[in-house]
Length: 250
Image (cartoon, rainbow, N blue to C red; front, side, top):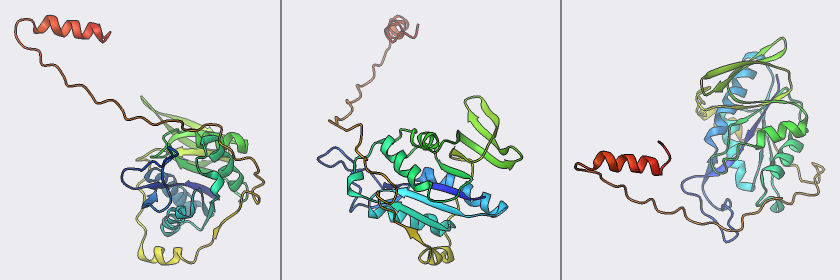
């Protein structure tokens, strides 16, 4: 089973916004998005049990190579990084188009990703990638194993989980807790330095229009939370009832 794992470098600590209202990603400390580690771990387990390779695909500045190095140290076979100045400020749709074009360069049975990035939180990129690739998608996966139909998938829900039979190839997002991501070993870290990382250009991917359809025009601080009200005395019950009525709870 050949698996593509999507990876993203996210800033560590509190992100800084530049004058263009975008997250500063170059020249700052970053790490592989913790959410992506769950998808990568599932990919590694599947290939260890059923054979095949794991290819890690990312889009970002040159610093995003740090995320790929960690993924390679964990056990992935190769990486691919799409980096171009024109992609700064790319929205979810442009990101999905770039990732899908990069993924098409490799044979795959499955594409795995985190549910959402910890610096963007749109949660829409993986399913958009699936639409562009023309394959099935299942979100919030807690367990996956190959089956005669393709894959048997358990998908998390508010009340438990649903079971799906899904044809392959497919794109899935993996929930936190589905697996326990491994730590890179010293041997893995040393071997990662010898593993290939492809750097296809936008021209290589056949992409000419990567202009974002959405832009950030302003950023405002969230309003300070008002202090609470302490209700005491004989009028407490009436006041509480009034407050609940104002909040439209009763």
